[in-house]
Image 1 (cartoon, rainbow, N blue to C red):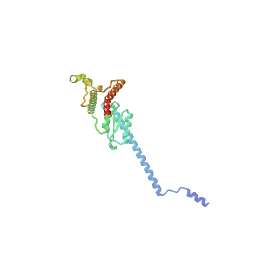
Image 2 (spheres, rainbow, N blue to C red; image 1 turned 180 degrees about the horizontal axis):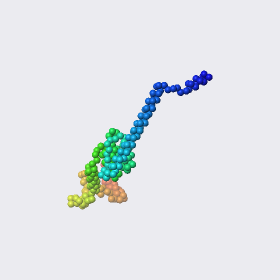
Image 3 (cartoon, one colour; image 1 turned 135 degrees about the horizontal axis):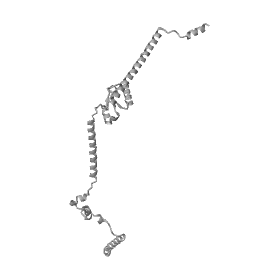
Image 4 (cartoon, rainbow, N blue to C red; image 1 turned 60 degrees about the vertical axis):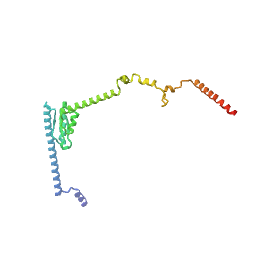
Length: 231
């Protein structure tokens, strides 16, 4: 019986000590502070969103404004502003190198920025439409000049006039052709026209000529051979 009573008493929750009570009190206070901070943060976000909605609405109604640039703001604020602009049917972009300097620009749909304008903002430059138009004209002129130069090079590589016709008063209309036919053999330098090298005889005529030369040579050698034998 004593053992049973002891086990029951040991299983019962012991009353909290002074240290435990203090820890629980601090935990409750910290949780309350966290809830309060969250509520305040939520309230600030709601107020900021309401203020952005008012500014975006005023921007849309102002026909003289095409875009608006905001001061640098935190990541959460930028996210809220992007969401408000999207709901309102606007285009928005964030620019800036580091987190502290990043800002938002909103544009009306009909005045959406070009790639060149966006590139200028990304570089931290101010957008000047007049200078941009001047640069565009210069690029178009440079492209046109390059195209014209290419066409001139093509015409130079394929002349429309005949070279011999153009300089016929200097070299004659058939100078090259005439020179080919009037070439004479030069024995000193061994220059022989191709026509002179060509053998126009038939095989039979060539063989007959060779046989005739052999008989003539043989006839010339026979008297000399007889004189030698008699001596």
